[in-house]
Length: 253
Image 1 (tube, rainbow, N blue to C red):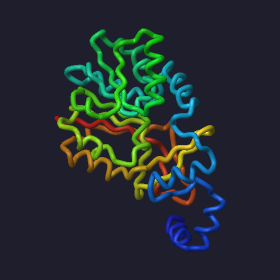
Image 2: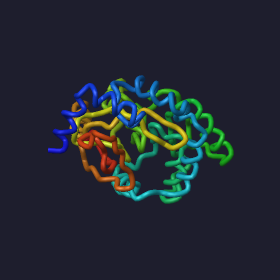
Image 3: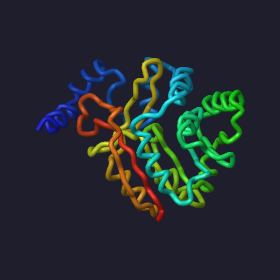
Image 4: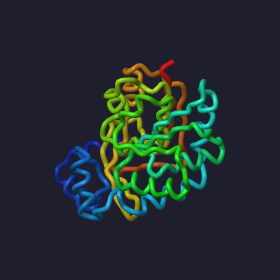
């Protein structure tokens, strides 16, 4: 009943005007472009902010509860992935964190796709650590030649769904793990995520649409799991808010 009342109120012009002022950027938008314009009125910085690198550098020192399902499925992949494409992989924090537990071989190739400032910072860190197994790239093309595509904590920063991003590849990765992803049972919405010192447009995808999109290009959903350490709430849109993030493992088998 509450959702119905909110839907009626959201459609009222005077209510939209009042909430537009009071909610600032904590609302929904028609596109990432519109969300970005609004976010820039408050804080101009986005993912290129130095705090993004600092946060992920700290995350490279530990793993989180939601990483254990990744370890579980990784251990059961045959053969074990030696070519990983880390979509939105920032400075390589997952590589460094996972390396402490999985002891990657010297022949491991960990390819990271992210925005230029992040790639540059990541390369400096890799050079400092004398780590040659990490490669930073400027396109998704190398994903076609990987054993595992890992998208952890990044898919809500892409306006396109994952199946559309993968659909442009000449060959699909055999395994895909999408972890720490905000999804809901309601309609997909675009909003702005507040990271305190920087703001970024993001999208909460509809869970069913996300899975059906992956199934539509040939993947089978092997398992999904809740990610209790994260949530993304959008005022006035409880049906499309993500009370917990989620993780998904897909396979072409």
